[in-house]
Image (cartoon, rainbow, N blue to C red):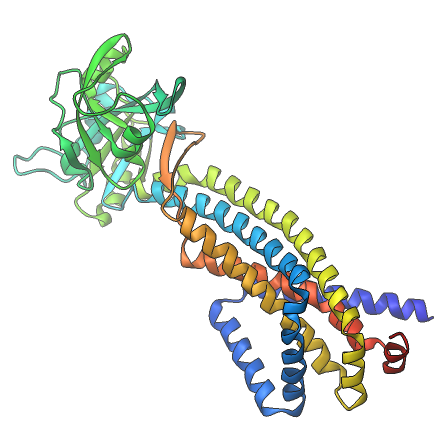
Length: 440
């Protein structure tokens, strides 16, 4: 009977922990601040709360005497938070880079069923129909502002490793691209001239690959191309090389076809009209989306993988950190057994003991979380990296360690501290006073 009660109590405890974790994960920062304020008020305004504070002060005063074991908790949780935040920052930075590439003022048209530009092809007649569709903005001369584009992939040597080639996208664009993508600015050199074997390169691509400085020549498709400029756009386009559509098509034997048509809309509200017009045209079988929607979808696959890997690794490391916290706090409870027993003998109830032990563990966890998150923010925020997406060649992006990610890391740290301190705290409160005093 006693064993059944013990088993039932443990099951209830585990269920309570699971419920706490579910609520904790979903709780926004105002809710957690409210909990902290409520705890502080309880510790100031009630007798049990004041007892809790007195026990907590005694425990914190002895932390320096247990510096080695306490540092195990801090370092372990710092590692968990650091890895988790770094992986999520990679995911968020990649997604932000692609999302920033699009907007609601432009639309992109691909062949029906295509998942990306590399899988699409549109003949000249279809491209012309798209460009003339209702909803496309016209310039002062009445010409639709649109760009029929090609994206091909070339291999170039990476900086620092000339024997290792990586993919780089080369985008053929029309002269209207400057009105279409006004975020693109030439920061060195000049624009390419239509009809010539000239390229401008994104800042990200220039940082990753050899031979892309202004004035240099490179061999692509068996022909010599001259780099005449460098552009900045603060999005995924910085990973690309740009040239004239016809020149790129000629070099790569693409004829008069393009892979996509990007248009500037009269307004975001004109998108529905534009899309409906193309859907109703029997000559076309195309997919239409805003560039914001298109580039957002391109980031989904890899972003989900990065987040899943980060969370999985974080969980595995968190389990190890929990066991480290458990061992540390059980050892601390054992070392303070006489002290805790004496406090209980003079009138301190079990609740102050439980809360004080958990507070001590969570404060150590908070310190570890702050250290881990702080190191990642200092080292990785804005750090430039590159990756391969399923529908992209190499994309250069920057880690984005946002405030929400730092807060996520802190929440993980506190959750680990809660679990790591709960069971030692319960044990400290349950040991009979006479037994604790007799063992020492």
